[in-house]
Image (cartoon, rainbow, N blue to C red):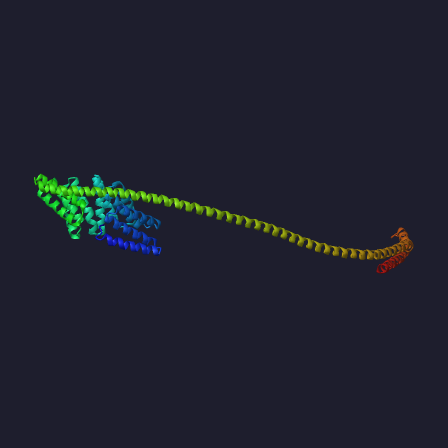
Length: 450
């Protein structure tokens, strides 16, 4: 993108960066650095531009801002493209296009055009056309003519280089119309140069001269030295073929002076960019060293903090363990004392119960002696009763029983004479025996009742 007033852009960007620094707004600082870098690019200060791009890129990475990272990578690629370092330019362009593709950002088409342009310069025309067509498709999807004009021009230019002149004429004509419509003097000048080359291949010198002359006038008015150099070189060659040597010499001098100026400029740019890159790398190495030192310091502080923490933890754990052991020992002693106290209570209770039992035994022993004496007396009484019974059995019971037994022997049912006497005697003896038994029974009953 070509700024019409890079000095004002630079001044505003510096003020913006100072304000962002004062409020600590890091993304604002990165944006200001990016604008300053663009201004320096447009002013040709590639050394300073690269430094600012790299500084803003580092901040964008810090905040993981993919769209700004992609834009910054594209701008760095443009710097390397300006000095002809196509390999580095492609590297940055491809990094940028990946980021924009992930974001589905329409600026992807611009980067695709830049990559196609590099491949065109490198002579890889199939690959150039592949990227340029993708860029054109992306620009059409965005419906943005300002983006469409670049891939259209580059496709036409590539067709000129591959001698597909009919297709080249169609695309270059479209590019010329768009450049006039958008007032894009840069593309208009480039388109006229490529149209002139196409006419040269068709051996149409008049039309070629007219195209190169218009390209020259546009480049001279806009101060575009590269386009001025190319147009003057072709005009010098055409006038030489037409044997217009004075004009040929005039444009050859212009070509020579412009080419030398551009060579010196490009050489200075290359050196400046290499110096900027080397200085930035040194700065990064120094920054990494400082970061490593800070990291080591932090790790040391962290290690000390961890050691102190671990010591405190170990001390706390040790104190906790000792406290726990004391508490556990105290608890065990308290429980043992409680159990011992309960056991003593139980023993005291058992002693009291034993004492009561002993007292009861003593009482029972005393009572037992009395009971034994009483039972002894009862047994003695019973023995006397038994003796009396035996005596009664011998005297009282034996007499009637003996008579009964004798009468039984005399009993004869066939003796009618003695039978009444025997029966009467048996009845008397039985009654006497019954009375004797009753008397004994009454005596035993009386003694039991006593």
